[in-house]
Image (cartoon, rainbow, N blue to C red):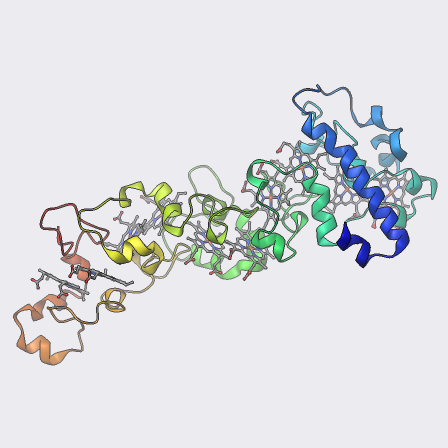
Length: 324
Ligand code: HEC
Ligand code: HEC
Ligand code: HEC
Ligand code: HEC
Ligand code: HEC
Ligand code: HEC
Ligand code: HEC
Ligand code: HEC
Ligand code: HEC
Ligand code: HEC
């Protein structure tokens, strides 16, 4: 509220106060959804508090329907259709209609700031996946609900996204990540929507906020998140590889890479970023060692995991070097 009154003029502040009051009114049905069965459509509450009802709006705005979307389901007592209709989001429209369609007397998303635009949606969407929206990475950077979603002209099959697929929606700002997905085999990640059996950004991330780092959907760390699906890598191991316990992303790029298994770089360099010396020659450039030690031939395979097979950890009694 403070933020609103400071940035707006006095008349606008009154309008904002009214808007918040309206939000409180529209919020009520959401909270008592289970107790109060849906009575009727938007029309029945039309006259209260300067509301004209959806049918009136549609006489002039027949193009702006939201038919066929989740918001139009009157059977769910929490939807706009079961509450104030258009005015659940655009606020009471009496003054707008009396003014012959006066643009300044109706809430339009063309002029709402990010905080106010989000408030419209979070009147109803505060639970489940949306619980942690406030101060999430996106909210903090003024990404709004309607940056990704569209109420009237969604392009996706699910979730009313502005673009046909989730990846396209994210690519507006995170093109580098989306391009990587096309490069490698983590998935068969689909650059398309989260279709059954395929992965999408939201398989790992919750764009609405999370308790983990980097908007990761599950767990409290990067590794927790990977281990949700790759449980077999969890251990506990008799012989743990410190690098694995620390972070899967030391060696794998979760978004994909040009190397097998989404490895951040090829072997032996992958390992040699940390293992600069070993009893057998650590690098192919180490000519002296290569020519003068019995272990020298080991490097010729160039792939450390040919021998160090259980690189994620070993439970064999003699698995100290992850050879078995
Ligand atoms: C009498 C016809 C009429 C009715 C009824 C009416 N509007 Fe409008 N509305 C208009 C006109 C005209 C405009 C201005 C369009 C323009 O200038 O582009 C407008 C503009 C708007 C805008 C802003 C559009 C923009 O481009 O900024 C919104 C949002 C809106 N109306 C919503 C509603 C809602 C919600 C209702 C029902 C409560 C409603 N209107 C009822 C005629 C009407
Ligand atoms: C769930 C919230 C919601 C409901 C319900 C809703 N709108 Fe909108 N409306 C929006 C959002 C968000 C936009 C911005 C464009 C988009 O998301 O499609 C918008 C855009 C508009 C616009 C274009 C001007 C602008 O603000 O960008 C008009 C006009 C409009 N709506 C009228 C209506 C009418 C008439 C109804 C009822 C039939 C209605 N809306 C129902 C949220 C809503
Ligand atoms: C009056 C309450 C209300 C308001 C305001 C509201 N919604 Fe919803 N919305 C619902 C309900 C109820 C559902 C259906 C149940 C659910 O998915 O939670 C829904 C569903 C959705 C869905 C899921 C669609 C699908 O096909 O799965 C999206 C996306 C969505 N709303 C976005 C928005 C956005 C963006 C805004 C703000 C512009 C908004 N909503 C405003 C009540 C509301
Ligand atoms: C960065 C893009 C982005 C932003 C910002 C965003 N969403 Fe979403 N939303 C998505 C994607 C992608 C999905 C589908 C995948 C999923 O369910 O996580 C989705 C799913 C949904 C759903 C349907 C599934 C569910 O969680 O019930 C609703 C409702 C929804 N969003 C509402 C909102 C609201 C309200 C806001 C603002 C508070 C918002 N979204 C902000 C991208 C976004
Ligand atoms: C309109 C631009 C925009 C869109 C679209 C967008 N993001 Fe973001 N995203 C941002 C910004 C800005 C940040 C914050 C970057 C920062 O703080 O360095 C961010 C941060 C993130 C982060 C990192 C969070 C953190 O804690 O560092 C993840 C993960 C993310 N976005 C995922 C997604 C996904 C998934 C989608 C699509 C569903 C998406 N984003 C769509 C702008 C966007
Ligand atoms: C397999 C899981 C997974 C999938 C799928 C995934 N991510 Fe990530 N993402 C992660 C992990 C783990 C991190 C944290 C990496 C780190 O901190 O080293 C991350 C970090 C990010 C970041 C912030 C870090 C940065 O480098 O800026 C953004 C933005 C992001 N992801 C966007 C996306 C987008 C967009 C998609 C879909 C195209 C996507 N992610 C798909 C797991 C995933
Ligand atoms: C939502 C589930 C899920 C999450 C979370 C997940 N993965 Fe995966 N991962 C998969 C699936 C499915 C495959 C494909 C398995 C297959 O093809 O047999 C896969 C494959 C892989 C592969 C092998 C790729 C190849 O070329 O064979 C690696 C490496 C991998 N994931 C690492 C990770 C890492 C690291 C993380 C955490 C950042 C992670 N995964 C998070 C589901 C997931
Ligand atoms: C020290 C580097 C390193 C770290 C850290 C690491 N991996 Fe790997 N991972 C590899 C290498 C190398 C391969 C390829 C092994 C091969 O081709 O024989 C691999 C292969 C995989 C595969 C595909 C083959 C298989 O064994 O199923 C998955 C899945 C995988 N890693 C998941 C993870 C997860 C989850 C984590 C974090 C818990 C992780 N990795 C941490 C190096 C690492
Ligand atoms: C991010 C750094 C890092 C990377 C990358 C890495 N390791 Fe390690 N590795 C370690 C650390 C730390 C230890 C524990 C060292 C110790 O206990 O002396 C370790 C231990 C080992 C050990 C057991 C050593 C001993 O003396 O017990 C072997 C074998 C090993 N790593 C092989 C590999 C191979 C092969 C690769 C590449 C696939 C690799 N490591 C990649 C950090 C790394
Ligand atoms: C031909 C099999 C083979 C290959 C290939 C191989 N190693 Fe080893 N490595 C071993 C054996 C066996 C040991 C056990 C100690 C010993 O006998 O020297 C070992 C031990 C180690 C150790 C722990 C002991 C020490 O010397 O610090 C590290 C670290 C290690 N290897 C890293 C690597 C890296 C990095 C690569 C790839 C550049 C690699 N190994 C390639 C067989 C191999």
